Length: 414
Image 1 (cartoon, rainbow, N blue to C red):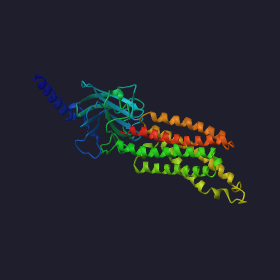
Image 2 (image 1 turned 180 degrees about the horizontal axis):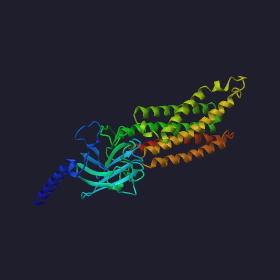
Image 3 (image 1 turned 30 degrees about the vertical axis):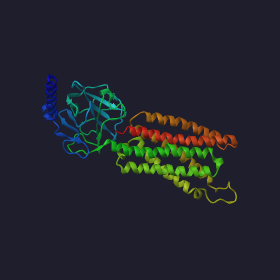
Image 4 (image 1 turned 180 degrees about the vertical axis):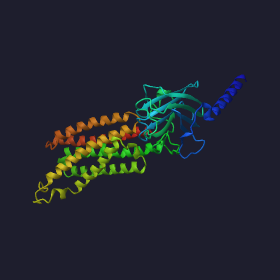
């Protein structure tokens, strides 16, 4: 009975402390008047996730409140040039089982372990509490950046996307497995000195759109285009099959590229890549795709009318011009497509296994290119059988890499 009484007293005490923690921020000497807030999507009051901020003198105050979540030990607010966690400046608040609050300044390479900044000064007024259903953390950081990668809250500072993430584990295990509970991010770039309302979206929705976009692009540039190129260089002894496979697979790559572009734009996630190498190269790839497809469709017009219709080698007086144009644009397009896919994988963040799978594929792809040039036009029947077998295995391998990378990326979605 004594134990029950002690337990009840502890429960009541925890509840009272939580009420105080959820109460007026002025009790902690913080003011959020000159700021705004980011709430759970489609929520106005008593939201599961609340992030508040406001200027007060030379510091920016922050408050993170999580309601209805169990087992939460850390919560973070991120500031990013793109609507994604990788390369974001982050303030991570950890509350120990004993109630000690620690806030660290970090930079995120993805959805995994943070790189803590060398200078942790400038963070103050740390307070908070957590129990089985609530997590509250308050702290402040100087308006001026502390480290070179820190977000600035000074007048005229660049706007940033805001995001909130949280989960279990100590402060050094921030989303170590690429998983965190229901993160949210701002729909648009945010001026931290403005008091205007800020709209949010569930990060999982944004990542699903990005994943669909990335999968279409990988189908085009890891599976279809490289496979079609290998077939064109090594299987010409199987005419007209090689040409049909090459043509339709390349058309498929162009179609996947256009669909991928439409997905990311229609889904409102194109802002993630604005100003990044991925976004700039992506536009170049799309333009070159259209140019290459049009050249293929109008190849006979470019080459000119053949003089001897009965001569299979007479393909027009300007055929050489088409061949050089088609080959040159094709090689440039394949290189840019692969590089753009890599930048996209890096921009997505999450598990580093995606990059590992990409580089494994790249090594095999380079070997396939070398092999294609070595055996191109081979007249040995025995060698041709091996070429056909390798072309089949190579295409299946490319498809398997796309599936693997997409599956790893899907596991990064909360």
